Image (cartoon, rainbow, N blue to C red):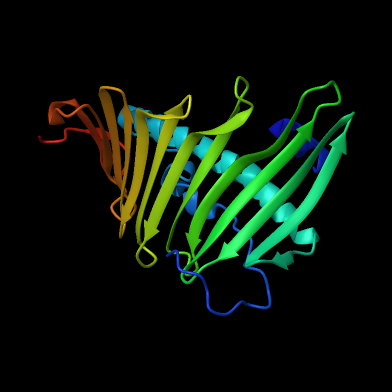
Length: 252
């Protein structure tokens, strides 16, 4: 379904006053981890195993950048359509058709005191008798200052023909260099044990993966260019590199 559209298109108190213009459409950049340290560094020396192993773990998050770009394109498509305002809610409505399939999208934004509540609903017909109505693909709340928010990404349960969450992400930003992002994964609509966190504290960055009983930590400092990764809770399973990206003892 996502491929079809991609191909065819190429605080909770009511607000006392309503803006004349609809809120700015979200871009999903806030849920993309900052990984330029790994994308811009490709040392060509022999003793860089630890750096490249950590890089492989970190770049596993790059898929979320592609993922957010796809969802962001659905939101940005609304910019070519005029929003209508009714009962405190802005709504953009648009549709696509491709090779006998069709989808209509309603994107809504409800402005509250400090936040905007977003919801995107799809109605789909594959032209072969398979249809669904008002499936909530993604929903979330974003602070008007852009410093915090959350998104729930849903999947369609074929048995119930209704949505259920498969990924929930939340973020908080304090200034330009203080940031925390947490993303949790769901199985059949139930929150599982898998999640990751991404944090920035100045020039210090951390990624923590949790998969069941296993935890993987990747740490780096963009100023010193040093870092390490660690498997599990035992610091003896920590693997470090220096400012030249060469393997070094961690001294733990």
